[in-house]
Length: 307
Length: 112
Image (cartoon, rainbow over all chains, first blue to last red; front, side):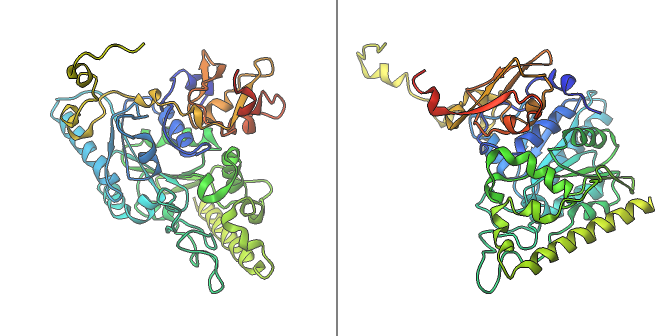
């Protein structure tokens, strides 16, 4: 359980003056993740909005040691730092406790960085990987990624006569990470700050690799007014589109079960990238997406019941 | 106040550091230097915070993307207008029972 008054005593964990869009939600995720840690951190990041906006030379918004590596090797880089740290500790040359976190967007995690992430998790480094998932390559101008939901309009899946939006369902990366049998895997959203901070604290406490997939509403790519970022994340959770759950040593726990499931249409209609779904003749597309969300939610409930 | 330029040397001394003066590998040696970069001029709407209505729940602080809500000893002290980009998340997320924030067009403050 996190307490905002206690957390606020840590001061600014992320410096102001970064160049993210007004109303961007990754700095919110980043501030919550950094505030959760009680030990010194070493952070890394794949290429993406987070790296591009917070580390424009000669400015940096980071207050921890920070390493930027390429799109594909954020997990490999920080796993190397962790390996060096544990070697020095074993040799008795360093005795302070340090934790390692690396960040990647959905492009750098779901697509390009998947091999290095999978390798780092399999090798069992004591690190946390946080994916800030805005469901497309937003930094380069909104191209589809494997995290983009079915039907979403991007610049590479435009709305035309033959095809309308992305044709495939999104990949379930959290499930892939669960299949690595690592000690801690979770899905979170910045709107549920207490849940996210608790998850980061749990992830940092485990001995071994941990992965947290955080939904990040993108005001540019999803196209909504800047003040609604947290509302969008909340709707995603309440519609079961983005379930909040954690898997500790293979045991599933759902952290938020909406009393009344918000219809997916309520979540989608606020985003311009889904506007074609509400045109006459596209009712089946909406029903299809709702059915897929329901199917994944039911599957999750079954996994939780199995223990 | 402009100083008199007497020789070429006076100008050259004021030049920006060259590439040889940069740290190797483009390292940034101090933390949080972006504080010096003001993003407040991006703003089209300004959040006006009312200390009377505020219940210090700090929801605005945890949701502010620009770390622009100033908090001291667990209490909100105001908005850092040098860095606030005016997204309005604070006004949107402030609990409905207190509504301590109002968004006002930046043009209202012009010349003040």
